[in-house]
Image 1 (tube, rainbow, N blue to C red):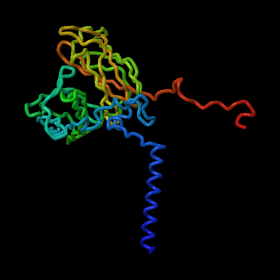
Image 2 (image 1 turned 90 degrees about the horizontal axis):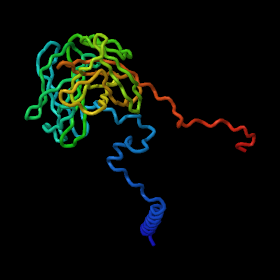
Image 3 (image 1 turned 90 degrees about the vertical axis):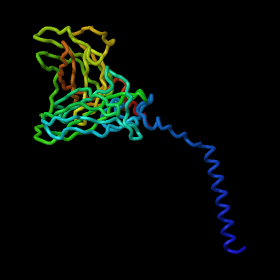
Image 4 (image 1 turned 180 degrees about the horizontal axis):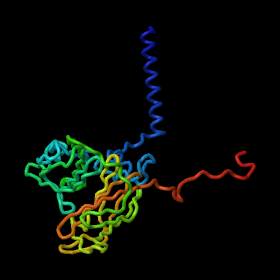
Length: 317
């Protein structure tokens, strides 16, 4: 047998040996099923999330201009303070087409939040939608600076709430506000509002606001956006948008309430949060502001701690 023939026989034998070894290994340790796309994307939503997942991470919204197959795009706004021009944008689907079908949530098809990067000049407004799918409203900036806009909406096609965000740069003088300190009291338009309760990182908690005027409780709060108050919370630093909802049944037409309104929310991470409360009295909407800290969670009774060394002199031998 010549050398090439011998090499060919030897190679064939090796292939047979490797094939047999692979078959045996497959029988002993079968392939682990690959996770579905939903599992790989939403690990933090399983019954036992990964230890690396941030607590409450699924509560974070409004940190991206694209999510859920939709994009906040084609933003047009005035480029300088004092300039009157439309603020407009579109919600685009995965194919780049403007979306025109939205579900109604909190009495509106879309809520637009605008705030400067330092938390100042907060506004909660409701633009109108053109038949072509463009949202717009008249706009004027008070100062220069970097502003964040948030579109909070529910596409009718999915029924899933989304909050998309984009940045608008406005030229002109900009004097950033000093870092906010924790504050539970706010005074606006003759009203004094106090906030009670605590934010908890990774767990739901209740916040209660009490509205007074001239020292007397206000009991004439009117429904606004389907509740007796609407609360927006932004995480200081990246201005992540938190989902906050009022507690209790939805008010009926003509119903009044007060002086207290309760909300439930979850702080996704420890840190400082900027809160903005909209409430309505006698047809006028007022906005109160607060600052709350969500501290690091203290170890609970179920936290694993090292066992003390055994007193048995023979332990470990």
